[in-house]
Image (cartoon, rainbow, N blue to C red; front, side, top):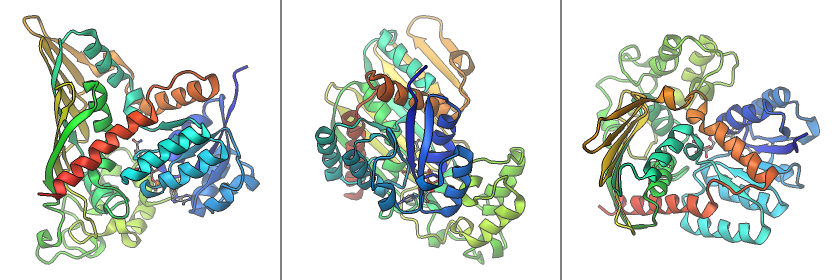
Length: 412
Ligand SMILES: NC(=O)c1ccc[n+]([C@@H]2O[C@H](COP(=O)([O-])OP(=O)(O)OC[C@H]3O[C@@H](n4cnc5c(N)ncnc54)[C@H](O)[C@@H]3O)[C@@H](O)[C@H]2O)c1
């Protein structure tokens, strides 16, 4: 009989409960024994789904952190709270699954490393793509030497016009003051992957970009500040009605799906609940009349100590979400395309190898199987004492690159 890891979840939202909680609840090697969320509706729903005893359900983090309640603490609260929560959890002796980004404050990165050394808990940062089979395949090809020595990485993070407006104009990550700069919120996975593939520490970072479009001066003539009263609500591509209701219908009116389940807690989803959320919440605000300040496009250049160079373009102006990475090597090139779901390997002078993603792995599941891979790694590390795929120090390297990029962008 395998050891059962007990789990306490802090932040029972989209990541904490809907993603990791769901995966753990379906896996008999985990048992969710405690929950904390400031939103009562979340507690009520997931207490029942995960069968958590009433005495272990909390609305206040201070009560949750009075004693250690489980082997592992999942921290899936908002970006600015991660370090505060992680420090408390380390002090209580938890091993921790910590949502990214760790923090937008450099000093806090070092504070966390010190605390981990002092208290000894394991901290696994949710850089989920490291655990996704497709990215592991990329690793394998680069390590095989087929493309020779890696010279340059060209990466595009296609945010998607609807994801851009949902998360970074109307949603939780719209304000760098209340959350984190977008290069951190959206690209810390890319930066983590890029530094991992480059196999070196960074030497120099520069960045340009800004918030060009989602500003008051670009609001069409006669538009209203809320979609519910706007004359463009059926035609504007960013209309909340089109993004949350029309897209939901086109995609088959699922009972529970993202991002609709962010704007309402009603499950199963209904058109009425979505309309109500659009009328009453910030998700129905005009994209040209929000209090957003994060960029809508940004380009970052990195020089690594070993001479590898990388360029990362993040843009909200794309029809699809997905990464496109090209790896240029001395003897070959790899084109990795999440949108067209294929990996192309060109070894110079030889026939190209075009591999559909479906041949490499089952890419269903959160982050192409990365969420499930991470939960598996968590078990291996915390229950079986196996070495972790990646360390807190390595995760912090990508955060430092993001902070340097933002500092440089703001200087222009
Ligand atoms: N690893 C990834 O790929 C990935 C993807 C998306 C989001 N994230 C990160 O995951 C974190 C959570 O994002 P989400 O999409 O689940 O957001 P969410 O809003 O759906 O969930 C956060 C939950 O935390 C609760 N909460 C906030 N403050 C709290 C507190 N002090 N005590 C208890 N509960 C509190 C909220 O009520 C909410 O239910 C964020 O930091 C985000 O950047 C990571």
